[in-house]
Image (cartoon, rainbow, N blue to C red):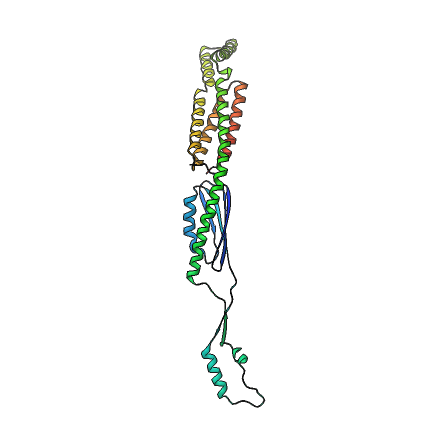
Length: 294
């Protein structure tokens, strides 16, 4: 499976009958899958299906889904109430005509309220259902474009993360090879510490033993180095696996940070401390970039 980012944008437009619409999808980082839909009147019925389709396509991300829909103007429908008009004509024909009044005209009769109705043409349920189905098909197209954009960005992020892991591995090896970790260097430091203790006016054997144990313990970063090597291997395996691995990578990044912090705390030489600080900085950048992985 390929690696995917959580950021992306896509748009898809379509039409059916008198309806025209356009989908817009925007995706950013999130701990889970957070869907926010905005649908126009008449298209509320597609929400459940839209959420289901998006949920199948995406694993994580805060996704804003907007649908804009407009209906083309239609020619009004003119309806003449024939029964009312006929009744008016009959009534006018029977009514005595007052002096000075002309005969009734058709335009006058049609102007009477209730004789003529002008109404806007409306959608039938079948037409609206067809528009909804076509809009859902265009949602699939927008989703496919969003997934592809997230995949492309994810592949680029994967390359950056691999370089970060290579650098973390190099720094781990540098700490491993640091001359101050060699037995003779540790022995020399212990001898110096012991000499200082022996010169103390308050010297006692118990303190000497404690100092020796403390120096030996503080110099031992074997476990931290082994864990860092193991974490690098696990992270590389996840990147090779692909798919929604962002949470696992974030967990590993936290583990990296803990081991690097402990290594720095145990350091008793400026050169090893410098390596530990650089290691922590590299791990922090790795973790920041992991936040964008699905």
